[in-house]
Length: 227
Image (tube, rainbow, N blue to C red):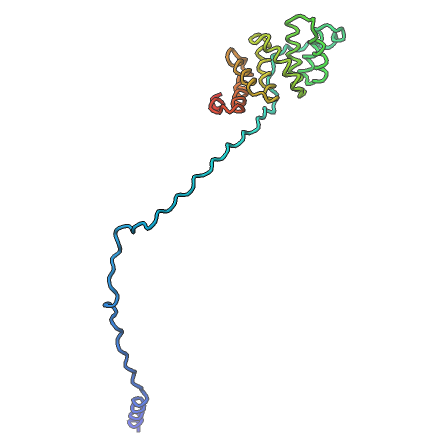
């Protein structure tokens, strides 16, 4: 019985298996694709490409606006004020007015200093005293931002005594007033004159900086870099 069942199963398996259809092999395409070698030479130029137009020359950029340092520039050395320096200013004596004005300047009382120094700067005083009074009045006007008046006074003192005690300081300050009023050429002359001889140490770097600014404003950039 078992043998019959096994034969039946084998027969059913043989009868149920369907034969696979015939699949031919793929065709050989090698003869249809010719071998091509890559060219070793550059391809010929068919047409000359036009060069781009030359750039239009641009105008030079404008110079930066010249600005003076915000800190107070150095001023001439002043003797320490005496006790009650303004006690004699009411007398109208030029030396007393100078003492009072200089002391008020050092204390930062600029408006009162200007009044006293204006009194000391009137004609008729001793020449050396008048020169000192006008110098301190010019410095006072500078700090009060009265640049035009300061410029006139400091130029007068600097031209009158360029290498004397207050002359160098006045000439240095006149360079800064010239920059403030937009006269870079005169500022350059003033700073060059200051640096041409012995210079008090406090104003040496200031004079060089002012000279560099003046040269820059005049378009003399190599000299500005060397100042």
